[in-house]
Image (cartoon, rainbow, N blue to C red):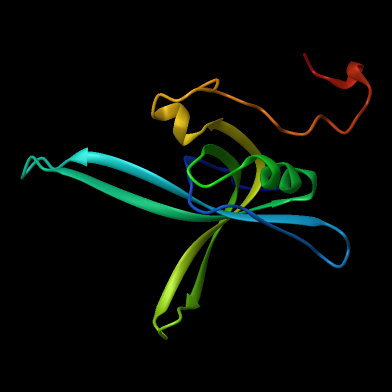
Amino acid sequence: MAWHQTIIIGNVGRNPELRYLQSGTAVCDFSVAVSESWTDSSTNERREKTTWYRVSAWGRLGEICNQYLEKGRQVMVVGTVEARAYTDKSGQPAASLDLRARDVRFLGSRADREGGSGNGGYEDFAPPPQSGNVDDIPF
């Protein structure tokens, strides 16, 4: 079986939205901005590019994301990405990068980066393994 994995680290662009499917499965949607910056070698000017991802987290992971994420928070998301073409509100063709999360790590808040209080670092709210048997853990 072949599959791909994408890892992004960026800032949440809007507060998450939680919804439940008819089956009762939770789905949390939010956006993440991933920015990169560099110096243009020909002009010596500082450049920046931001790529936006539309993230969906399912099940318990979605409920946890809805509870703890907020706009501006730094986050790492691991999952599979798919490019999707659509027509925007003005009738122009557009595309989005949709990332279905398998793992989400909360890295800090905007206040942490701006010198505010808080742990300033890594928080892990990933759900525990499904198996209740600690003998199944490979380490």
